[in-house]
Length: 216
Length: 248
Image 1 (cartoon, each protein chain N blue to C red):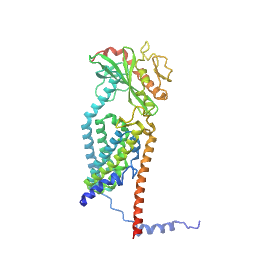
Image 2 (cartoon, chains in turn blue, purple):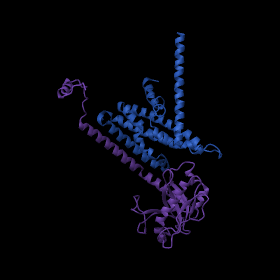
Image 3 (cartoon, one colour):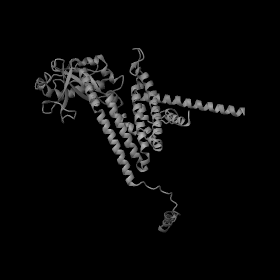
């Protein structure tokens, strides 16, 4: 891999894994807990956020040289709100049932701190292409986070996946999983899992280090 | 107080700061014209994008809404093949609803459903009442022949999954709405008997709704939604039924 491709890959993977908005930065918790009652909702919310993220980071980046710092937040919010409106119309045109299921959380993408954070921390300082690649990575990372919750909650809480029943008629759904407390339970379990992964990695690195010093 | 105070002291404290020139350099402010230009440009671009998206999706959104309404009406009046939208006016008359704008103040929207032969198959109207979590909005089908409600469907609700949302699946509950009596009084001013949900197993009359055990609040909301809507709509509608008999 040549250096620039590696950089691009790095830019992309930042959001997908190292700085995953849901599990590492713990951002955007409001939609994460609220709309992940089913896989379809989680996936649509993730994709909507990703599209808004990519488009607004692209435009913010294109305007970065003519945006005075005093008005930058106003500019970012107008741009983000515009693309949220576009996505809002698009979802109404695709499916009203989906639009009803996602409810106010589509409009609330405007105040999702992942997007404003990306605009301020990355897009405002980088050319459009890297900004959009970074945004795409963040969007995918957020979608993965929502899906991780959505899959678990739909399977446990409704016994279905993408609306298809997984178990026989005897299955008694664990209803609390699709109620608000279930969102916290599942999120907590995932955070526990990722923190365990992180600690294990750290422990192994330390063990390697100790081994190396002993050998020396 | 040991600290001396007076105008001379405070002045001596202030002056060195004011004239010392030790304040951190303030970055030069951007010119106002630049800010206005950027904001204007952003607003113009964003305005164009939004208008483009609105225009581009308008037809699809309208079609989706129409399909959703038709589906809800066809569900409560299975014989229906086409629908026409009407408004029942506060004065008592009815008129076809044109355009997609808001209905006149006090007007009640309803749908006349026609079968394949163009004959009136039933009337569908919406109603809403406060449920456990939020307003439960339902669509109910009214049959002029038996003067009764012949079916219901849920338009929107946020009731507890597994408990309140049984109103769409519970067969015994839905059986209430195969012939729910909503006859009008002799002078056509109101319903002869108020539609009301009663405790599970306590239904004795054809205008009562047998509630789901454990979901009484949601069941009551359905009963009240039908009652409130029928009390307003039917006195205006029934005297005009002949105008709706066949498809115009």
